[in-house]
Amino acid sequence: MRFLKIFIVFFLLSQIAACGKQKEKTSKQETAEVSASKSDAKIQVDLFVMSKCPYGVLAENSFRSVLEKFGNNMAINLHFIGSFEKDGTPKSLHGDAEIKGNIAQLCAKEIAPDKQFNYVMCMNKDWRKIPNNQESCAQEVGIDKTKLNTCVNGDLGKKLLKESFASAKKKNVMGSPTIYINDKEYRGGRMPRDYIDHICKNYGEKKQLAFCRKLPPPPEVHITAITDSRCGEPCNPAQIFTSMVQVFKGLKATTLSWKSEEAQKIAAELGITKLPILFFDNTIENDPDGLAKIKQWLTTKGKYHILKIKQEFDPNAEICDNGKDDTGNNLVDCKDPTCKSSQTCRKETKGTLELFVMSKCPYGALAINAMKPVLKAFGNEMKFKVHFIADRIGDDFDSMHGTKEVAEDIRQLCAAKHYPDKYMEYLWCRYGDYKNDDWKSCTGTNKIDAEVIQKCTMSNEGPDMLAQEIQLTHAMNINGSPTWIANGRTKFSGIYPFDIQANFCKANPSFKGCKVTLPSRKDSDPVATGSCGN
Image (cartoon, rainbow, N blue to C red; front, top):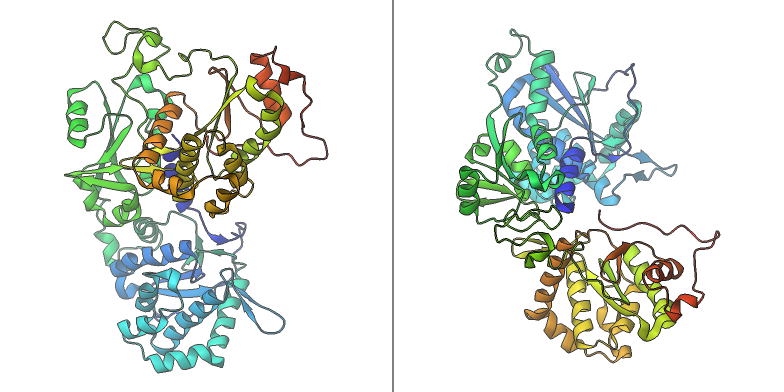
């Protein structure tokens, strides 16, 4: 369930993540240097940010709708985090581009204070381009470009930046975003509704803020999970529900059993046959802020908004180790053909060693390279094969290290198929510098035709092989790179030649290669243990 876990972590981190270091919470707070464009506003919000920090950008964007609710009752003041060298050179976490972006946004306030926030919102539309979008955004919101450039490139811009850095330093602010509301540090959630609830609760006396008197309850949003008790913890939606409550305050969660008529009907409409299935209905559109935050994780089909998580459990397949006939075909556990590839039911195959890796995983690279002395020691006694760990999300492949890893997995499968006697030399070349994308440099010296590999990867041949690999790794419940399987049944881990040999020889004690002394980790060696994945 790697994809599901990444999804959960994404939401938990989105509530606390920052660029830079967050200062420790203290009971005593210093007085803020407020430089508000509306000094008489009842709610003063001070955002300490970095113009190219994605978390700071998210905080600024969230306050757009908050500002719309409170209108003239609220003033938002931007302060930037950084420092000056002894020679007067400004420094910021994301480099010179961020320095220029900070100055442009400060100058916008100096020239047109009532337009600064709209200017920042414009630049945030494509914050990676900051500061190259400073002039186009000035034109869009109606700020004089000539005056802006004069400020940005002159002494005034540097003066404003120095004052802004000083205000952050006085507060001991190091992390972007850090938020103060009416001179008190805010440490709650970062959705617009979180800010609104906090402000209305703490500063929304009836005579002060009319909006708070008529603040409606959070919009009701329905999420449903379809699961099966036989699946156990991998299908448990509890963590997803907990994460979603942080996004949708009015969340209503429902769990349906796969065996129910309603669940069967919905799954058929969605065209999904594996579990878990988690989806929203159209009520998610009642909370546009929440929808915007998770949109990249959704796919829409009719009235359903489906979370893009990996479905691994097939409720219609035989469970291979529960002693029951789950499919009603009178074939129990390993007698059912669908259990053929599971580790529980695999036949023992003497002298085989299988390695499951991700091609961009550093630990997988260590394991592949360790096989050079191992294969030399065992020779024809050992039948060695490399498998690849990936996922299938809809029609696309997914892998921990991205699309480049998927492409390299396929190339290595193609090399193994078309050049079975040469492909290990290709792999040793590739894993010697696994971050390098120049795969063709490893073909010529090993007498492998790059065009053959290219044709295999661009046709259905290569992707079909990776799809088969995914079926195998799922059936064997293998998620971590590297994972070893000796004799088709025995799973172990290790990345030193001696460890690989020792585990393989437990299953094959009579082999001559077991008597060869192979390198092991010395006390002086760095500890190189671990895996990519679960």
